[in-house]
Amino acid sequence: MRIDLEKTLLNKIQPLANLKATVSTWQADGKKVVFTNGVFDLLHLGHVTYLAKAGELGDKLIIGLNSDSSVKRIKGEDRPINDQSNRAALLAALFFVDAVVLFEEDTPFNLITSLMPDILVKGADYTIDNIVGAKEVIANGGEVKTITFVEGYSSTSIIKKIKEREL
Image (cartoon, rainbow, N blue to C red; front, side, top):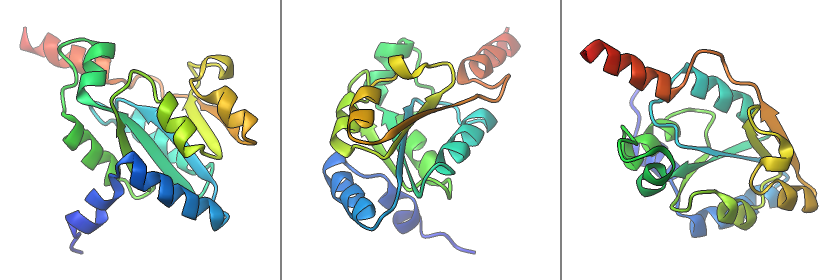
């Protein structure tokens, strides 16, 4: 089976202005829109499992992806390992992901309040009271959910393992 990369993958990566219109259409059609966000630097089983579970909570899954400059501010100068174009394309390649949108800020607050998803999802290492945008989504009639991570998987641990092997 041949995949038209331009149509299948890259069309899922949308600027916020376009995605706002898409989300409005989905919601008008009665679709439940789920939003989550992250760096997703070295895509691994933990990420894929988390994202698949998030996707199961609704009809459409949007991923807010930290831009390279945002990642550097949050994680340090050595990150990201993969640039934002590569990270976005890998996420878009997942069949259960409907859209990927990049953001430059340190938090996805502006994305969340612009898109106003029906369900906001973060990892279970967060509590609802410290999830950015939770208050706004709930006030708009939406839900906020957390998902437990698969133990033993993180980009940081993979990077550490690689560095240890280099020594």
